[in-house]
Length: 110
Image (cartoon, rainbow, N blue to C red; front, top):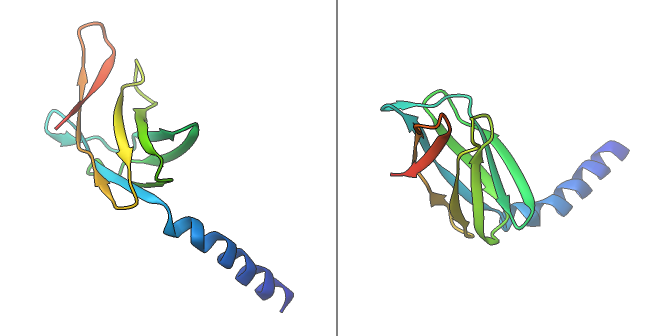
């Protein structure tokens, strides 16, 4: 019974945080194919939220609605990144991952 009480208390405390979370989602492709298992980091005002792309290159990450954020694929040379915005409503950002002449990668918005 005591565990049930703590579980309910935890849910009550965490539920408002979920209500105010924004969602950033989209796809990462390279050469027309989805980039799978890429680590996606979204930094909003110093708060970093991580996720991983699915087999088809799609991602869906809940972040605090703090305005301008930076989305980074941390597992690639050059740590390719792009500016995204977090809002209370879901925001879609699709990217192409391209290799530059210097060997680093970059993200290009589609």
